[in-house]
Amino acid sequence: MRYDDRLKTVLKGSLPEGSAAALQWRQVADLMAQKPGRLVNDDVQSGLTRLRDLHERVDETDRIAAVQALNGRLRSAPLLVYLCADNDAVCDAAIIAADLQDEEWVDVIPQLSARGSKILRTRSDLGPLTRDVLNLDAWGGADNSGPLISANDDTIEGMDDAPDDAQDSEEPEKKPDDASQISTLVARIEDYQRNREAKVAQSSMTDAEHRSYFVDVIDGINFETDDSGTIIWAEGPPKGAIVGVTIAEPTFDDGPGPDAYGAAAFRQRMPLENARMRLCGAPIVAGDWRMSAIPYFGDETGRFKGYRGVMRRPNAAEDARQNSLDVERREQLQQLIHELRTPLNAIIGFSEIIEQQLFGPASFEYRTLSRSIMDEAQRLLTGFEDLDIAAKIDAGQMESQSGLTEPDWLMERLAQRLQSLTESKSVDLHMTKAEPVRPFALESESVERIFARLLSAAIIACENGEELRADLRTRIGSQPVNYFSLSRPSRIQGVSEEQLLDPSHGIEGDGSDAPLLGLGFSLRLVRNLAKSANGTLTISDERIALTLPAATTSEIGVKETEFE
Image (cartoon, rainbow, N blue to C red; front, side, top):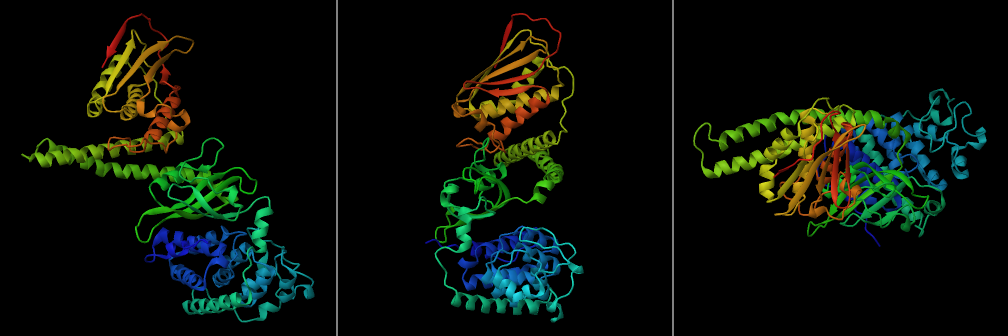
């Protein structure tokens, strides 16, 4: 037997504000909607009370979107009654999303608002008991002047033009913002839940649960993981279809797993909201999902124990909006980076003033501290710049400028730029250049950026005292290229190219000098930078190879020069 305390976990703490309030409203509604038979009466009360308290903090658009996301998965009668007391749009979406058994509808109908009963009459998938209570057969079926809808319909058209029936003569609909009415409704739901549990004994498996094992696909999965991210419990599909899948490692090729955002959030023990998740294998679960989950911790020790959450099928609107959402998020990211650069540059400037004693003498302790602050700020600034570059590449805004860059100039610049890093790691970097190497057919800033990021990542991946060897030469052809070959650092020996280029990949034991965004992100950034400059980055078992366009005319000799 497993005790499900996800709802209690979500309800801990004070009422959130802003976007966090909308997120919690969605989480509470989602948890209540899909586990009506497993929530005790106190939990139902607590959940509905929290939805009521959040009502004024969550605008109508967010509430409608959250209810629409439950399409075909709203199986909680108390929650349905509560939502039908909201405004018309929320009520309509709740009736469409509801998936109740015939006998459950019979119990719910007397609790519904006039609007809810009216919308329910238009559904074409009602059972005989429900139709009898609504007296549909006596009237010749549902309202013929309006379109029939089912639990999978997303909109209601022509609803206001449907002829009024006997239900319309009842008392006027109550205003959704009336706090006293909501409180009364919560009390009514408590009575309903108590009476319902007294009348209906829970069987070992309901008809709905039976159906989930034999239908071709399902729309929702509740799950729980252990502290390694492996799913150890699931409700919805057959256990073997999902238990054992991990949410900690991002998906490769066509395999199961989350996107990079989901994997990164797991590593940082952060809540997941609509992360992409791919499942494979049985047709009942195969395909793309959206995953929302929160971490949970032991009450006595506070130790992280895993994640609890839900997966749902993405709706068509999400897929249709994805491109515009990506553009908006990219613009927001670039704006955030721009705003963060100013204070970071100020921190670096003041640290340099203290470290160099420009305004007067400073103690050794202060100078050491200022140097540490400056190094960390520089590391953050480099990480922000990498994010900015990655966003520009993704948006197609990163264009390499034509020009010529001399190899000798590049080697000298790299030696200066990498000196402190090689010294801190005690790494010997030997670069051999076959003379004469043709100039790079790119402007100097682009070439230096690519080489500096590649070599920095490689040096950080070395053990202390390790030796790296590299050589640079020109390969002649119709399109000559400069070919740079680098030995693999020992700490990434035996790791596949796909794993190394995964943005979430890091190195065990990374220290403060590690790339802010991880080794995988840095290598992928180098590859994308090279690609945008008509070059390549490839990784073999022994070497890392970088090619960039070379000038089309030059004389090739056989002289070699070594740099250290």
